[in-house]
Image (spheres, rainbow, N blue to C red):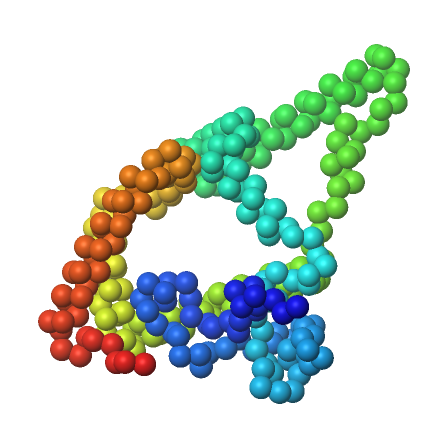
Length: 268
């Protein structure tokens, strides 16, 4: 039985996620070539990077998700992140949230070198003290439990060549996508999108005058751990206000496009 249309792999365009807001990059001319040394995916008896009309096109799922038989690490990571942001395990989320806040507050008071050095000294003090304590305890009790961190020392933490190649291909994809989108905006391929980008940069000048990078990062972390919970509790009201704001923005943009000569998009 054929898969539903929404579950089938589509050829991936090099337009970045920001192009959905700016509205560009949808003419299908920038398709991602197959990475060098990548394994072709078989479909209906023909490899995806073999001969035929679909040659040289790779889907985003095949490029960034790896083979179907590999463990769904990305899905597990996303599920863990969602659990943290929605405070489903209060203790675990509190530890992560508190660690982020402590790190960011430390960076606002000390340099990066000092913060890294103090964190390394704190970690080393804890591990060395625990190692000496366990050694003394084993000597007094005359036991042979071995190294207290033996399980962690034997833990496999190396990356395979296939994993490094997959992440490199994904990074290359996003870098190329970003460069193409910036070129499209700065060289005014679409007047409306370039004007939107200019307004966004103009607003960021005021944001930069009020806040520095660490303050914005601190606000982003606090928002990440608070806004999802607030949205779940007040979803109906938030959706209603967001709909009103979106309608108002679309109305203003439509009026601006109507007044600027040449700002209307050509019918595709």
